[in-house]
Amino acid sequence: MQKAKGKVVSVNESLVGVVCTEGAIMNGEVAYIQIEDGKRLKSEVIDVKPNNMAYLQVFEDTSWMKVGDLVEFTGLPLAVKLGPGILGSVTDGLQNPLYELAKIEWFLERGLEVDPLDENQKWYFIPKVTKGDMVTGGSILGSVPEKIFEHKIFVPFSLYGNYTIDQVVKEGDYTIDDIIAVISDSQGNTTELKMAFEWPVKTAMPFYKRSVPERSMPTGIRILDALFPIAYGGTACNPGPFGAGKTVLQHSLARHSQADVVIIAACGERAGEAVEVFKDFPELIDPRTGKSLMDRTYIVGNTSSMPVAAREASVYLATTVGEYYRKQGLNVLILADSTSRWAQALRETSGRKEEIPGPEAFPMYISTLISAFYDRAGVEILSDGIVGSLSIIGTVSPAGGNFDEPVTQATLLSTGAFWGLSRALSDARKYPAIDRVDSNSKYPSLLHQDEVTFLLQLLRDGKTIASNILLMGEKGITDEAYIRYQKAELLDAVFLQQNSFHEVDGVTDPNRLRTMFNMVKDIIDAPVSITGKAEIRSHFNFIRQAFLDWNYLKADTEAFDKQKAKLITLVNKKSYATENV
Image (cartoon, rainbow, N blue to C red; front, side):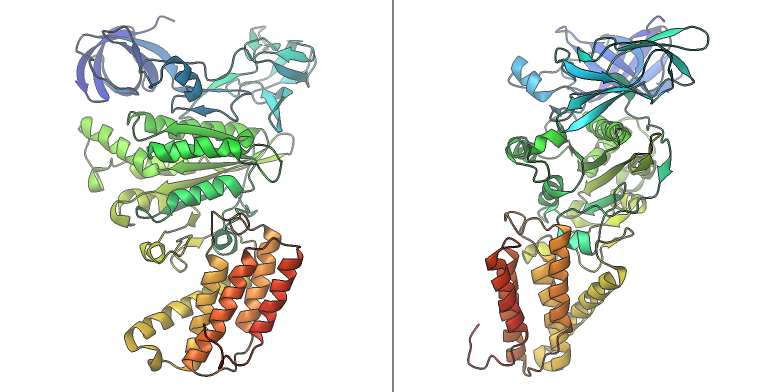
């Protein structure tokens, strides 16, 4: 098919108007703009107009672009290359490996494109089909070892109908460009298959059989696992103001969540935060495998210093890779930081196209795009009965911490868990600063539902009593109410708050979570015979400090058991008249 050609007729930042001079244009196809210095800038057709006109969204800096520059259309949509070699890599939003780009130029030069997967690396392919077998799109041809996983090699998902295996290579070492099988359809048309294939990033991969997210995913963060969990295949958002701990929470989830594959989409955030991940993750060890954390991680580094238009591509790139590894039968977690930057890029493009603006100048269709993004998460039962899942956690950065703005509201409607970060809690250094009362989740907890209800009711009571103390002072409430308030404060301090940077307290496995909850519940249920506000305060202060010391000790050690015994003794203590806090 002859490729269409055109020329530039207008330039407005990353939005370029073109006229087609040869052939026909298709919405969503990739185009290259030839600029004066010989570089070809990658772009995407986002709007086709009458009279052979179209708008392109350019993914790179448009400096020195001018009217009359030539445009070549590919006829293909923006796609991601899927195959072995993705895990452990760091790419930009267009799947260019950043470390390979760094070998070419110290600074990121526009117009550079590098093969996303190493075409020279050999993979040990083990075939699982033989000549004469019937296959279809998504059928497994074989597998290769990739990092800590068995990477399945598929018949491309874009192939429909039944095919017959005509040829398949023997077990051995092959590159991703080697032909590993030849298949034919009922008309005798043959197709050569390789280990890697491409898939359009804006097209969701079809589910073989979709299931409901029901199994809670341990994150190592107590407040999430106990009160506001996320399930395998679920969705969550953590909106909050600047400095409330969104990025630290995301990094903790990336390190400690019990997911097989973690994909970090640094979408428009500061470069320093992305570099921190680049530096730290290769040095960290995954306690479940004993291997480097990067062996299960893929990073899309599209920071705020990169072109705005590429933010959208980075979000869809991460999602498509996540869907691919879900097809492998793995549990995948995507951390998008921040979806607000993606929405701001959409707002800029919409404004340049002179579309009718919605609330706060965001496009009218912003909620549809956000909903479609989160809808790509889910649990999939594959053809061989294996279950894979894709969970998505999106960070939202509303201006001034205003949760009523359009992006936050659209996200709340699309996600199953809401982790609202509180400025008051972060100012009080109560981390994670997830609002204990306003946050919610529809997924099952690692605790029983009646236990979750018990904790939430105590927190609500504590908040109500705290408001009364603020109005009337401690003397204005009864000792019974003050004890209830102190129990709520104790629960917050020793169970919900967590030191993300501590080796032990930074992550709590399900067994330890259960042990800690049982101890907290025993303390809350224990009758307190002490009277007087000062005595009551001293009683709970001693318990709080002993519990915090216990949190920092490794489980199943002598020190851990001794501190637990000390804690039980303090709970049963009757008086603190001669002691100072």
